[in-house]
Image (spheres, helix red, strand yellow):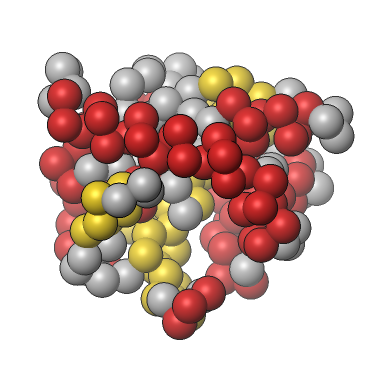
Length: 202
């Protein structure tokens, strides 16, 4: 599928902005996943099984990958921002440059994790991206995605898209995955976040 030029430009502007902001972002977000995300990651790791192979899209500083590896799974760390990969390399972690909008994901994986990253996918590209995630999973594999709650969309330095819980759950199911659980939390700046755990039917 050809990605529209507007969506590509929005995505590239976001990635470039993170190149400059990566160090500060690492300082702000901390290094332990939120308890809601921890619960979903634990379930995904259990589905993957000991030594299971998990793809993380948008690893950022790598805190979620660290947590997952502590559960006994293997994580392929990826990000579209080179600076994030450099930060991880500085502490001995290897990652791959990957843009979820333009690149294929490989696989099959036992699970795919994308926390606080698909908010940067333009609204008209979310279906192709979720379909990629579904294709990358083995039958019975798990997907964990967190999205900011709301209806808004911004097109500044960082292109961001908010989704209401039911609307995004419908996109997950339209991509061929079954929603298993959902949790809601309030994050920084009092913004709501939904975390979804879904599985690919066996």
